[in-house]
Length: 325
Image (tube, rainbow, N blue to C red):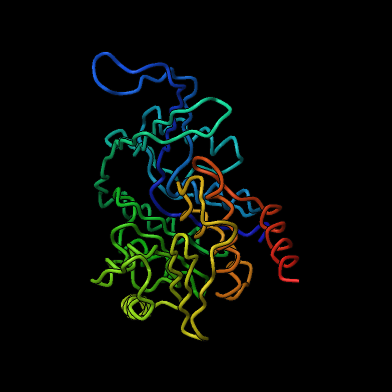
């Protein structure tokens, strides 16, 4: 997986974490007052997928839009400091970088509890000139990269015609999709990695706590037919993952580690990053799914928007093999 070039096209989000220690109950309302001691702005959304590709040894090539604001400046600085080329990230004055702010309370060296989250959201309306510019960028980048990852959080960066450009010029290279709200808008991708809720909503049904596996088969079949894709990897929280590929029987993977998670923030980004990078390296869909399952299981045991490293992935595989013996 090391050294593989991955185009990451999607919505880069600022994940902001404000930490405070309990001070007292407010006189104004029955709420806790926190004394703030830390304020972090981290790469979220497609940015978290970029970060995970990097920590796994891959070389991400971001194609995205950020606002000319403090959050956008902070994210570009982080990407640049990591050695990532940001020349294909458009800076737009009219767009405010999507920011998800989480307030966490607890002692500095103890477990911290998320109290509330609020989102500052904007939607980019792309001009024809910008759309043409992005089509050229994506066509050029997929020609030199080993795979592409599409991360659609619904903020207007990802468009059907631009994803079609990726799939048209991929020439057999994997193009993977993670779309929060518009999963069926991007036919022709190689694989998609929705969670159960997203998959069921796209298929026009519901899944009750993952108990109805027959319905899960139906959902996966509907998605595969609609997207005309090779595989669907459905993440199922504490129940692990389910892979439905055109060739071979469905593969149900139990959750790696423990179902007592610390934080699920950004776990889906880790899953698709690991999955895509593995496919780029020549892994089968089953092998890529197993690696993604390890990656997802590792990051949910970390607080905040986290990444998984190559060493952690290798250690997880070795540990599983030892337990199997």
